[in-house]
Image (tube, rainbow, N blue to C red; front, side, top):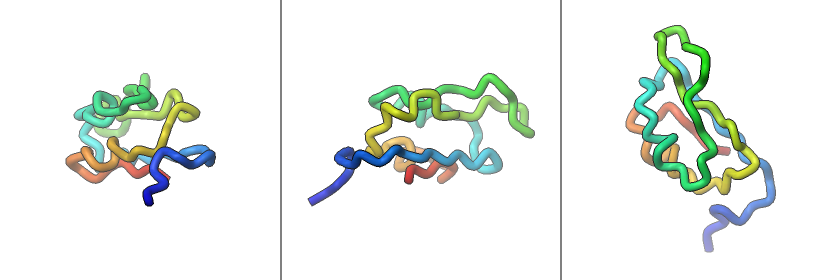
Length: 75
């Protein structure tokens, strides 16, 4: 039986800014709208995703699974 989405623990979302190319697939795929583009630019001049609604995260890991650059992790 899977525990995805059934935990009460607060999620942690880690975005590796060195790997992220700011395609925003993770933002678009999130069913709970947890991620949004950062208002600040990273070292590459990109608006990488940041968690803005972490309490809504159900740890479905769709953002992690769909990231083409393996730049995001959900714990």
